[in-house]
Length: 292
Image (cartoon, rainbow, N blue to C red; front, side, top):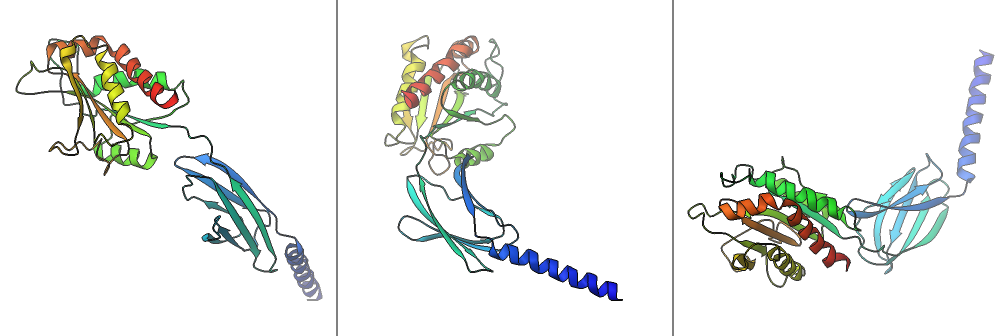
């Protein structure tokens, strides 16, 4: 019985020593900044584990923007769009000690985000007398070229996949907060397969990327066989046409290309025979707009 009592007392003393050591240890923490996905995230790492802290984060106007209780670390996830100074106060709950640090944030040079959105309309068949198969297959082939070209630039490239629904495409693009959502499509008339040409769609002429839409149309026409096929840059703001991939309700910075008519023999043949040059022309246009 005496041995048990002694062991119990030793255990109590050991617990007291450990707790006392932790209580006396000063608060230490560091800030590790990193860039992941959509937001600039700040991971505030505290050195004294298993002791609860109260963390207060203030902005440059001394407004409280974050308050958390933690035993190890917190992550500040709010999106930061400009230079800021943060004041961070850490309070040790048990020892009432307080430590304060100022953290100056300088926004890194922005890397433009580009979302390439080839058509997922695999039911749209091309002119049967050409090598044009389906809209989704041919547009994905063009995007393969465009993507490969842009991967070698200082641009961040995203892309949909052929299994995604349009709802999923616009949701992903919106979440990625892209600088350009570029939809790759080919057109059709259904009633008259003599109609042909290239056209580019954007929501309005007030869109900041409207000059890019102009350049895309111009450069596609530079490789298109006939000038008469220039159907121009079109807007949807005052039109009954509601294209989800250019409407700012669904998409930020959206442009949609109709790269010829896949039910027209000449256009279908031109597209299927010029996948490489079409893809490279579009890539070069994007690169010149964002990087030069």
